[in-house]
Length: 436
Image (tube, rainbow, N blue to C red; front, top):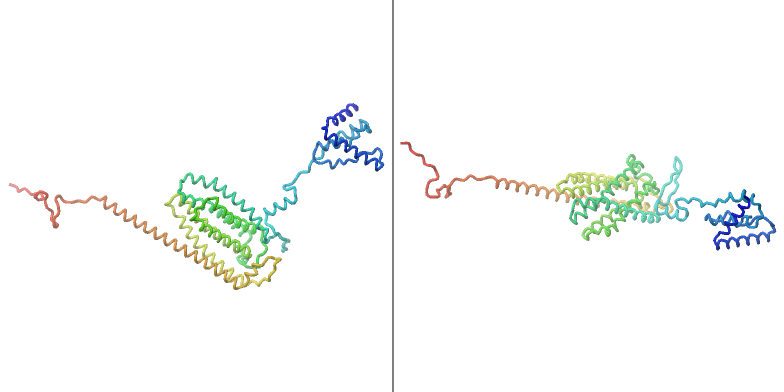
């Protein structure tokens, strides 16, 4: 039995491929040379079995090279008992999500918000964030995510509806625009409402200006602003992807620029709390408008949602102006002026504490809101005028149709100077016969 075991071990080594067999002999020579220099006599080979690598075959060959079977110095029973059952090649340790630390750090730079700090509070330390240049990398990543989601909504929802409606090219373009914005505004309204309620900005309106500047942001607030900036930046390449008409490009560019200026301004001036409330109001009005357009494209006689949008638009404009005046005009002047602290990142808020700069911003905002209201009133007056003209023309057309449908009773003969004349010189009246 022992002989068979020894012979089988030698046979396994003999059947080893030629390059690996040569490598094995070379390891043995180096090992015995090291033993001769150190004077260790008949000790075991110094080949490192633990660092054999992750390849199972290499580990097995390494064991065979260091095995005493090579020179027969160990009896076969000891070989069978000590060495042969122990041939378990080392396994590679399981890798995590990102096995390389450098790769993991780079991935987190793209996926998660950066510049996290631990802020001490009464309940302990709280992790919050502030803005910086690394936010541009995160925004770039979510621009690609927004492009992918845009294509998914277009492919699996809007294109299928367009095939059934058979719209013209102009209506087709407007339908796609409104469909994308309905999905975005609905998602943003729900998300923004959740953030505002959980952070307590509605239940405590004083928090909109207390402890200004709000340099440190919760995770969900910063992530919301980064996603908003990414979406409106992704709308620029979408103008090319969607093949928007040249006549529509200036209007859409103006809309994109206004959203980017307001969102980036609130983010950099540390007015994120006020910006969340204003975005909630704006997106709510825009959702009703684009929803009304979608319903109108499916049924041109259904314009009830436009009336709902008109009411919501007026209410949101009034709330927007009220919040601007309340926070910028009355709330922020009561806050003590903050000194410039570049390490804290309040450079823009330091400028905003200047009364001249703050009043200039308030004036520009009020003028912009007034221009929006003027265009809205002008649009509604023109729309109502067209509606009443159309209704009056329909009434006149209906009255004319009734007059044409009503038959006219005329006496026989013809009229001359108001007197009915007979056609053949006879009297049109029937003569009474005298009784005999």
